[in-house]
Length: 391
Picture (cartoon, helix red, strand yellow):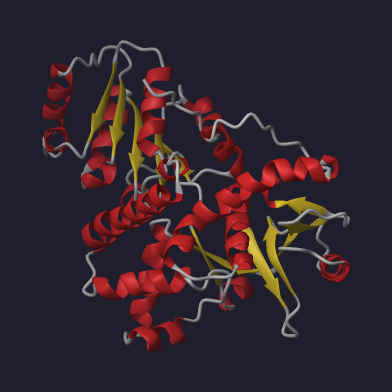
């Protein structure tokens, strides 16, 4: 039996194991939601629990029943006792349209504890927000961060707490593994492959799975070819401003259509839009956002970008787990790549210089940011340096 490696998100979910609310894990396809759900199922000791995969049409048919008491009867036939607290684990909930009202009914009438996974964020928002208001906790699962990547690689290396303790020999211990992480990304199945050929094939499968199951089945778009071309264009423009008008011209469809497709791709976790830093929310929304992709491995596999852009996306992947991300840019061109929670600045450089440090310090002080760091891919003796693998 293959060892299951714990994901860090478990620490966030565990405190709610015994709460009355439904636990929903969502995120990009192939990030390990099913594995996580099975881990939780095995970890919680109970003789009154059931795990059902809704990709199985027979399991789906149980919850598509319009009479909810008949659903109860079916679950009882499968061994669930509603006189004791039942635990029901459902994988791929987006496949059953009326599931939110079913979940609400069983929480309200029978105090059932649900653990659910779903692939598409927009589905959860559209269908779950109102019907399960106050009855759910949603957790987002992303590709592996670098700390998790080391566990999946079965590396004995343990990351120091801060960059100041990293000498050049220690840096070299991590740099090859971090280069692999940047190049091939953090999808668990890709990380576990042994060579470049297998990793590339696995990334192609991740892309195909997303396109077939999210875009074709869930998106219901008239021009699926345009959506695919848009995905390729966006992967080639990571860290760039999102020019809807230019994309509209290049792809030969209206701006409104491009905006709709971009919104879908963000809602299903393929991309992430980050907005400019401002103390005013209105100003932030008005200005042009930048675009990043869910995983640097996909970019490396399907687009030609610079080493700096690929590194910047990998940095973004790890920072996004820590809070709200913005960017800052002046008309003069002076910029900060990422600002975390409106208080910590990160400027990403392959090899930072003293001039980079002075610029970052000056802008950060003017913006009254509490902390600022240069994120370096190479070893550096400059002050305020963090390495990508420590984020």
